[in-house]
Image 1: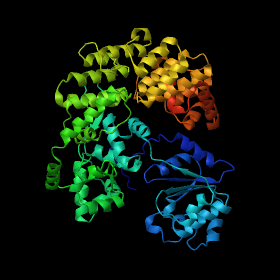
Image 2: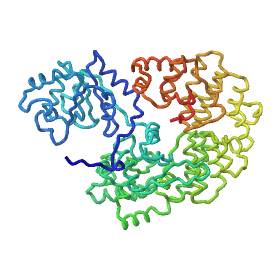
Image 3: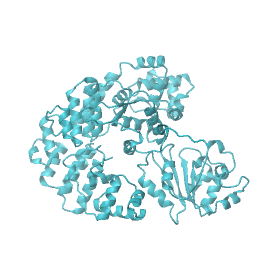
Image 4: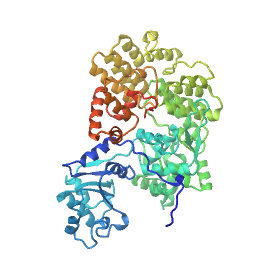
Length: 599
């Protein structure tokens, strides 16, 4: 017998399962004794099959799947389980011994297979785990599983941005990706995990990742700049625009691709073509009359697919607009900072330039980094600052922002190194006056008396509440800061409220809110946050919580400690109640593991 070995580098290994803990528990619960199963629905590529595969891992489970090619073949999906000539009743009888059946791509089942699944749901003892895709036509026998209330339905949403970043940070990309690359991948894929994996593989295999040049902090991260690889999956997802046959409509799409998201004069476009594209949900027109492509993947793919001469012509048509648009974007960000309102706002021009690998003016990069830092997006702030330093040499504003983001991430030594040993202050930078910056830094460091009479608005309210030791007032200030987008400052105010509260329940609530906000601040490590404390746990609870904080699932913890999964779940539930935590994602902040990194 001939055997062969394949190079491990060419194998496509499964990505780590992440971000669906609650859904996983729901699915497993639906398969326990006394339950009939569950239907999982969701958009293509959102991870439905991976979720159910995790749910049935280690169980005795029969599997069937629909395919487009076999929709007209009787019992095609069940060919390995029932005889070719079986009737519906005979097929039902053959499956009487199956206790758990996973039906993937149920919307593609042939009518006989769909009818069999329906009969199993009505009369059988088989527990059913049925997966179908939103928006795809499904046999009536399948859709009636949930519309007829035979089985509960779990609609699965696309993986959110935070979980996508966590997935990529967990080694799915084969390298640590810098935040602007993670943001770009999320914008393009919108939670479509199949597309995400395809893009990540293509970028890595084609050598499009470059090491981030950062000698001061040595982040070890990699960046992706340049065109989008037009892979088979990318082409499939963008077929509506790439295969457009009407010349006027294709021209309109390509003009938008090379001008978007810059402002366009509606009168210069073919209105009839635009109407057809809008009717097909390929473009949208906002209240100001600006036209944009409907999906963020379409523009990059149209640009990548255009020939060199066509791209040059379309680029010239859009030329001259980028500079003014970038200046307008920078001015808008500056106004938001001055008004102490840093809620998320679109910055498409800067994002486009970074994605394409074009030079980014340092004056823009510094403001964009400052805006991100004030929002608590510390790793993004550092990335924007590095973009400004990449092409400007040694811009002092960008270098200061890089130092501040690094310091607030818990590495003051590296921050001093970035500035060549020069002092950088605490780094609030919330108001134009330097005195106000120092004053609010004093509040964040727990010495509000140094800020007396030097702050206004919500920052003054924060100083007063802290000086009075008023936990309720600190919580209210934190809510106002969160509403304005200052997530890190809000987390710090809640953390200060923990120590100010006399009511243990109020303190637990404040801790929970502080942890939830700090978790969104990309590794923030500031003096106020270091005061978050563990509640009283039993030795076993502390052991289980520590493992959960390190990323182990309930099942992995159970195997490691020789416990049942139910016992682990009960201990975690009790620990959450004592810690004031909502779920395991908050645990790294509470236990403060030496090697744990927050999501």
